[in-house]
Image (tube, rainbow, N blue to C red; front, side, top):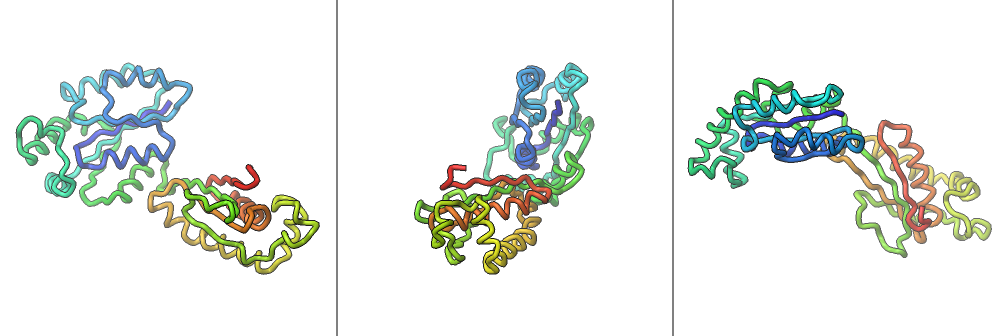
Length: 281
C-alpha cells in the first residue's frame, strides 16, 4: 500500500495537491485525525492500494509527535511519501484577502496575520520531517499540480482518459461531451440497400466508408487536431476527455469514425474507451 501525507500551511495549496492525487487514482481523505491513520489503512487494505490524507494545524498535536507515532505503527509494506506545502506570509495574506476565507486559527480571536505566523510556528516540526518541501509562493495551480505529479510519478505528464462516443442527432445530443463533431455531410451507407441493416462495426460498411476520400480526410484531420492539442489539454489539468461523433441515426458513419479514432488513439500513451450509444455498446 502507498500512503501520501499532505501537510502545510493553510492557503498554501493542499486542496490542489489532493485534487491531483485524486486524479491519479488515490483514495483521498481531507483533515483526517491523526490517530485514525492506522484504522483507515486497515479498512482500505485490499480495495484501495493508493491512499492520500491531508493534515492541517488543527490535527497537529504536541509538535508532530502524534504523526511520528502513527507512522511508526504502520506495517512495513506501507510506502509513505510526505509533502509539506508552504508560502511566505505576504502571499498567504494576499490569498486570504482575495478568497475572504476564515483561517483555521482565527477562532482564537487573533488577527489574520497573527494566525498565519502562529500556524507557521506550530507546523515547523512537521516541515522538518517530510520528504518533499514545496514553496508555492510563486506557483499557480497548474505549476503546483505539475510539481506534485512529478514527485509522485517522476514526470509532469498526466495520463488523460479519452472516451469516444457515437450517437444519432435524431435521438438527441449527448450532454457530457467536451467536443462534438457532426458527420452528417459524409457519404451515407444508409442509401445503399445492402448496407442499411448493418452498422459501422460491420466489415462491408467499413469497406464502403474506408473507400471514401472525404471520410479518410475527416478522420485524419480529427486525429491531427487532438495530436496537436492533447498535450495542452493535459497540462490544463484535464483528466477525462469525451469526444462525441454524431450522424443522423447513429448507426453507420458516427460508429465507424468513433471506432477508427479509438483504434488510432489506442496506440498512444492514453487510456482510450468507446461507446456506441444507439447500438447500446
